[in-house]
Image 1 (cartoon, rainbow, N blue to C red):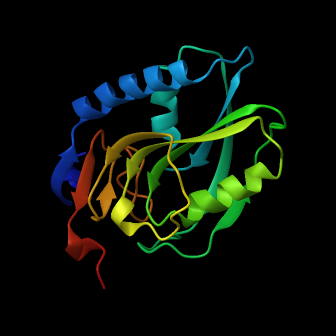
Image 2 (cartoon, rainbow, N blue to C red; image 1 turned 60 degrees about the vertical axis):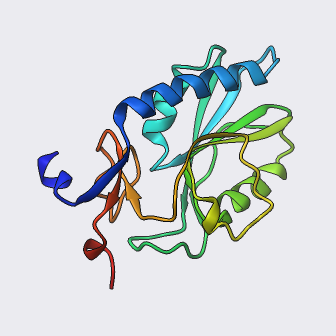
Length: 183
């Protein structure tokens, strides 16, 4: 960890704050569903994997895990073309779906995912995100049902978020030093 920590300008959300907020989110999600069947949690890989694992243990109802691998960044820092690399395995028709995202930035990726999943006729689709950057939002129709933290327009890593596949395993959210990613 020490090697990666020297690349962090500052911590904006501590490990303790993350744990506390995830407990609250679990309670909010549990109380918002009145269903007899399992909730299908759809993790947007790779960034949301850690968040989904921790969050799922705070939801007091049966859940089913499924995963989508959606790429919009590649190894850069700017969102681009959205590509579906791995699709769902579960049939979501007439089922309640909770999309688990690490960060919502421009809104392009999540809008594409929601539009695609809606064609499969789920009973409902809700979105939970660990981080939300509303000032970067391009797609205004994106409505987040459950939001961990609203953050400013800074390049963040840790707790699943990466830069060029590094820093995901930091237990907090930190701002990456600009000289590491700027051109």
